[in-house]
Image (cartoon, rainbow, N blue to C red):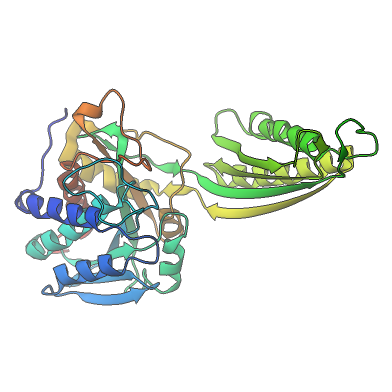
Length: 394
């Protein structure tokens, strides 16, 4: 494991930060319902000199700490949990049936809350303004864009933003950072194939919606393999097919649902265009009617080159040679909306427990957990970012 240099103030606060994480884990709330989560955060910072804006987007919080003249940067954490019943039995197991912090947002909250306390103690080491953004509803609801619309990045205007994600696909003690795309655009589509039903023994005169849907599924798999640059990343997956009534009845309607993902906006638009073309072409070829409902999801998460260098410098102070390329996936993140507004960097914080090294516990599973030592690492990186961009005496 790489040698770690935890900031002394964070080291002193580590037990408190872990306690924060366990509280959040025990009391998870779904997107836009994080009422008690917000109350707890506000109670922890009530004695600090902060400008508090709450509620933003129902439950969101922007806590601004000013420390003399200087630029304003933002640090962000997401608040929401997932509709999952926890099956593991840690001492901090979820107390809310059917709701669980199965992605690490409890850790993100604890890291940011610990950073607030630390920066208040370290006012002699930085100068300027820090916005602490506690954002609701990352899991599919896109809370970030609503926070932006309600002015989370304004008054004063943030010039940079940073966020992080505990990442069980990387060993504890490692930090993954890279410039450019780090998470994909995550879109959804629904397709209705309308044919003409009939008896399974007499297909003449029918338009078999199952057959047409099968041709469409095959055609969609060629979009990425025969249209995207092989050195770029994209995927189209049909995750659900529903149709038909009985074994001997030719179906007159079939519904398909799926997802389309890409790292680059131009590839995202190409996939969308080719999907539309496939639906139109197959409809004409087989005499069916095909309706496509395409939902734009989160855009690609794009790290700014300059702010990536800032994050790399900060991470190397903490994790040394443990800093490298992140484990990439085609997942999506609404941090992407913030990064469209101001330059910034999204950081992947290795959090796999040593006993899970061979088979890591994945995010969004009912037994998700992570190495809580990663909390102090993440908070230390945030501290170093602030000290870099807002140096004392600037």
